Length: 537
View (cartoon, rainbow, N blue to C red):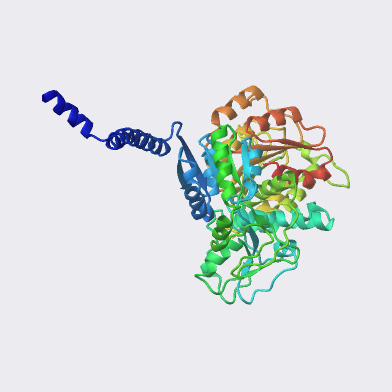
């Protein structure tokens, strides 16, 4: 009975139920297996086997767009941990110079890359142009436009922010060269147009770094011209309806917002940067650029109809010409603090042609050079010969180092200096006390040092040291190096007059302080040599 009962129970489970049960078991195992695999695949997809960090520095104008690009490409770049940092171009350039560069950098202009390269810092350019913003001139509603950038620079109406930190001002300086290239004229003449501007800018730096021009101060009656990008103009005009943007008829330079990587960056970082850059060429990127007041390309006006409309881009000057222009600006705009030290030994009474003595030509050249200095320049004068300042002292102060627009002995300092230059003609005597005077003048330059000025001693001599009781040349060079202070750089610029000058010694003296030596073979060439000496900084 029991066996038959078991048989009956077994036979009572139909084949269909057995199949369904088996399928259910197999299916359950399969579901668990597939489910486990899917969950594992999802976990793998949400993690990264080889994560990398990216420090991305960007100029303020591009930060919102860079962050959008990072977000938009995040799904394809799960391995990238990106930190977006907003920095001024000056800050990022300084970081490159300290070997603390970001992994990727969005600059405001390719000028930044050129200037870095000129200082020996290389970058890897990933995208030449992420965005574009043409540069015009902002003025008040009554301010007239100009026909060319050169016309603007020489008009007396243009003011600049510091070209070292403001790309729009830097491009304004190079724009007149772009016009010269397009028009087939001499770029050198275009470079000369920046001299008055540089001196005007220098006046703003005598008491410290020049503050940027306040766009809120430009009112209805303003006629001044300030270089500005279209993007910055639109942003500023939202707060000041008086602002008007004009563009010279010859065209405009353009901020091109390049993307670069550190030169030693690996392929992973470069590929990530290139993918970010490609987002700006998508429709989504183009819409984001337009909404931010930036162009996809130079020739495409903003959809809002604001800004500069259709723009013709100026021809870009060569890197060399750009760097020489910006370097020249840096020289011309830094105020000078000069101690001019004149050889007053008896040989300065020697005839030098055209019925003049060496001293007469030197004093005349110095007077003409004085006319070239802006009013905020600092100038002082010494004379030297053996015992010129009394027994045992070879130098005599004729005028202290002061600004030309200050007062000395109750009169304008420039006028006082001119009086002292004429006095040089009556005090020539004795031998050349060159070495003791040089050390004393250099130490005076250190005491008078002004961090906002280019500080130099101009040493003018027609002979060799012949003071038997003075320092030797090796002792002088040692003491110059001992006295030097890297925090207070003072250069000695030597000017030798005639073939009698001891040029080998003058060169060694100047080189010991980072300066240069020049020879005026004919004393009538003194003014040209003075100009070379002042520009040698």
